[in-house]
Structure formats: structure tokens, C-alpha cells
Amino acid sequence: METIATRSTSSTQGIGVRYGILSAVVMIIYFFVINAIGLQDSELVRFGSNIFILGAVVLAIASLKKHYDGRNRQTPYLPGLAIGFLVGLIGSALYAAFILLHAIFLDPEYAGVLETQDYYGVQLPLMMVAGSVVILGTAVGAMTGYVLMMAFDKSGGAYK
Image (cartoon, rainbow, N blue to C red; front, side, top):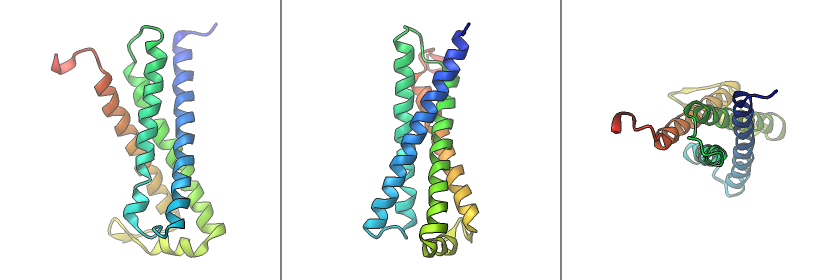
């Protein structure tokens, strides 16, 4: 027999995975767009892909909220945090894997561009660039989830 906690976990994971994949797809489309218009060498423009993780977390938490509001229950805090983390992790990991595969197999010159750019004051190997994309995307997703769940908290907390 399935318990409420099991259903909650599966819906949290399902929502996180679905919106994580969605954010990765949109970031890959963004990658092709910035390459088509010649802005792929700009770190600032490439950094802009993180806005899609933020948007996906907003949509995912809205989906979670709708799921619980339909049952006349308050949206639980921890599943909201988990969704933000999952969306960021899955979206950025898939996007980093795509960039890595693209740079290694389809456009080796782009791999050279990524390796010779100055990240955080040093030049990084391609695998570390991919790792930094995953870490940054996960942090964006987790922090967005945290802020949104604070906004949805109706318990009163310190601001009662």
C-alpha cells in the first residue's frame, strides 16, 4: 500500500526530473542560438543560460504548489527545496554533458576556446569547466527553491 510520504516523494522527484530536463533542453537551444549569432565567446552571454534554471524552478514549484493546493494542503517546505536542487542539478548536468560532447566531438576548436578562457582567475581544463557549470546550476536551482519556499511559507515564522 502506497503511503502519502511515498506519493509525495515520487511526485517531488517526478516534478524535479521533468523540469530539470526541460531546463536542459532550453539551455541547449539557447546554446545553438548564441552560436548562430556569434556570441558564444562571451562569458556573460553563456552565463545567461542559468536564467532558464531559475525559470524552470519557478515553474516546478508552481506545479508542486498546485499539486498540494488541489488537496487543500499547505505546500511542504522540504519537497520544494528538493525540487529546486533537482532541477538545478539535472538541468545543469545534462547541459554540461552536452557542452562537453559538443566541444570534444563536434567542435574541437570550441574546446580550445573554453580551456583558454579565464574562469575565476585561472584557466581550467575542459572537465573542470563542465564541473563548474554543474556546480553553478545546482546552486542557482537550490537557492531559487529556497527563496520561493520562503515566499510560500504561510506559517508566519519570524514575520508574524
